[in-house]
Amino acid sequence: MELRGFEPDVQALAAALRGRAWRLATAESCTGGLIAAACTAVAGSSDWFERGFVTYSNAAKSELLGVDADLIVAHGAVSEAVAQAMARGALQHSKADLSVAVSGIAGPGGAKPGKPVGLVWLAVARRGGDAATACQAERLQLDGDRAAVREQTTLLALRRLLAAAA
Image 1 (cartoon, helix red, strand yellow):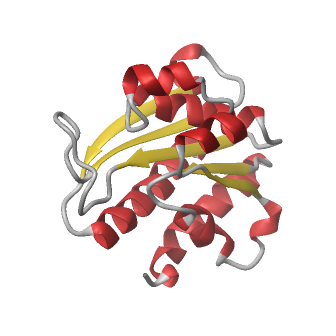
Image 2: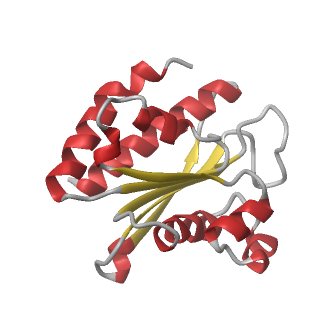
């Protein structure tokens, strides 16, 4: 995957975050760190990128982000509730003002009834603010192979972050 393809979106995000003096944290499962990699591929990202969590396993989600294991059992790792808990956990375990979390099924395997390949939950959380805007989650159903699902998720995450920081 060519990270330079994300540069215009990262540059816009960087400007928005710098304008607010905000810092960003990522909590990634299905993208395996691609969002963080896209952000840090741009010079000067240390001004606004605080940290990234790659929490591929359920244990990592609990240990690094504080996601309740019972929540994962009840809803599954690929769920709105877990994505929101990941995004909130990234804020709680960092000094960031804004976070993004993604959990999904990139394929080609891993599908379950009601959870097809290409299903991704994306959540963006903001420190402070009212309950309605502090953490927003979105269900995505993406097409393509594993690489395409991961690339689309990364791009959409960057764009949702930009909207939240604007």
